Image 1: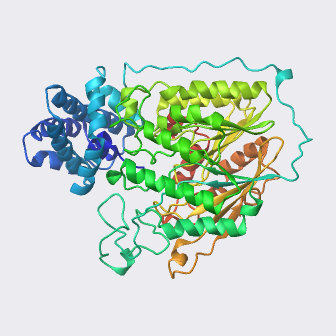
Image 2: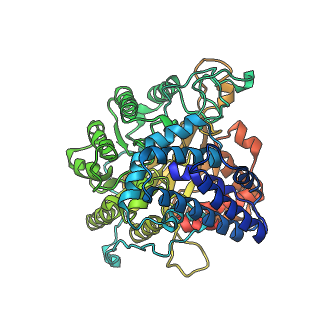
Length: 593
């Protein structure tokens, strides 16, 4: 969610408008001259400011993408040149601050904060990655604009041959479980210890509701949360957990927590504060749900700096993010067996056999997130995770196990590194017959990701796998809080149905009495499905492609009937894009949506 150091410098170009080639050349020339001028000027020259302000209204996608990529390369080239010509740390910080202010529009507080936090790892990458080029940086961070690095390596994760027909798993109807398993899915709490009801909810920083006097009553932070750029206060988190304890926990078999505990105040994070908050939330989980096993994974906000997951060979304590894996081993030991510790320490991922025939594989997909600047340094299967995933799935296949995959970044996320996304897609295709479901977070929306059989030559799209997003407890930005409870077949581990629970933030903030949680929908009932088998998802996709009313319902659920989002609406073009995203399970597919 947060823009990191180079992205801060470059992000304005993601809203570049259409203009003639002459205008394009003028803008590029202004950027080229302006970023050089900024080296010695106290403030941006007028022509650079004017060029930035005149960039507006994209219409021709190809031309705008080309301009984004060229502009990005101009800026990164100057940044790299300045450092390689001998600029010291203080000079680089000063330069980054000037660039941040002109290209992001953020104030001193956020710009200085991000740069102070990220300067050391960024300089390490620049100094130790000899083949770091503008093309590499821009191809990674503006992959949605189809920027190209001609020297990019298309690395491959080897896959074992598929099983023979007689080796495939057969359904076992003799499971001792009476009734379906019930799994609680929580995600993206984004607890803000500094949240202050009544403070300014409409501020200039990337996160509000912490301080300041609102300019009018309507801008005051709500008691239970806020639709503006705000996260969640402690009393709201306690309400969520205690409500679940009182109403549902006795029927819950276990809990999936798919990441993001830390707030979006990423420009002021620290190891000590992140550690304190992580311990506090896991401590609440353990005390409020003392008899329920929780299977947690890391979000992109847990490390410091936010989004940064360093390579295994980066050992300097000042910049390594090994500390978050060390912390996770300790905190997760409440629920996970000792056998998971080696891989958690290696990269925050693990595999657990829940019972004979049913395995959970939890991965750290944050390694693919393009806001993780360490991808500039090393992008080839960070910490050997995908190779390990193949090994675990292959063993599960041989042992005739069904698998749930937990992952923070969902398949097809447009900011997931395209080569990682491509290889993950191939892994899911290979092992789809044993992967009963996937569970994600991160995007804060209640979305589906449906994998289609790439080898099927029929006219009908054959569904082979489904990923469910838990949406978010945080309201960031403009959503109602939620949680989900799944019913899962104990034999096949397939999802039979799920219920989504929400409360309306507008109504809740009318007073300080506890919010009125209610069931927004049951998936089977809402979509009038006989079951949630893969063929049923094929039928659902077919209906969605022909029925805007059905897609409007999908949008309502996606935003959890948020007053703000419902008012914004979603026209036919928007609905078609949402439908496209459902089957876009690889980054390149999402870009094309």
